[in-house]
View 1 (cartoon, rainbow, N blue to C red):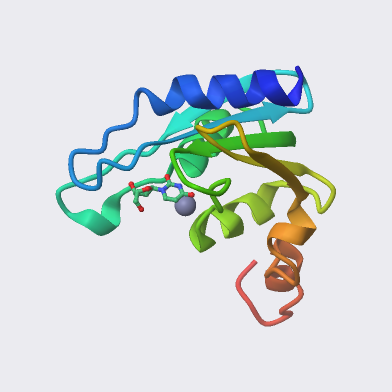
View 2: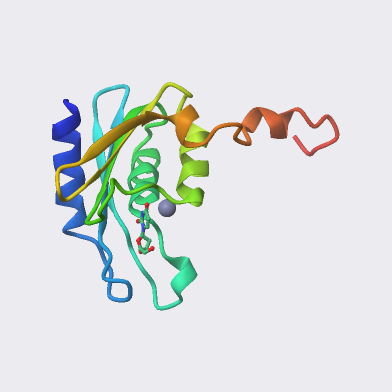
Length: 138
Ligand SMILES: O=c1ccn([C@H]2C[C@H](O)[C@@H](CO)O2)c(=O)[nH]1
Ligand SMILES: [Zn+2]
């Protein structure tokens, strides 16, 4: 699976975005270490904050199918610059992606940029931080 193939799958997913409110479609495609791809689009809601971004939809789809090890994710929107994932998605990615995992951000003009998880969200809160609290419920 090349970067361009993963971006194409993200573009295909973007066509399924449920965006009656923002009209801003986003698509994502996540590649697992086992070689499977899961697609996601943003899914909005009349109660706006309930909206789920494309990146989280793709990752949750993979998790729901028993996958937890990710190699890469591609994200695409019709933005001037390659679309930067929101803070909530970065935190969800940091839960499952290793610091070396690659995020391909792109747009509909054919621009893309590939960055690592560590570059996308440095110094992130990690599961190990939670488990390092001796007094917390285990
Ligand atoms: O990286 C991003 C940024 C925004 N959105 C969605 C959420 C909402 O539906 C719309 C506008 O914020 O775009 C994503 O899916 N991914
Ligand atoms: Zn997001």
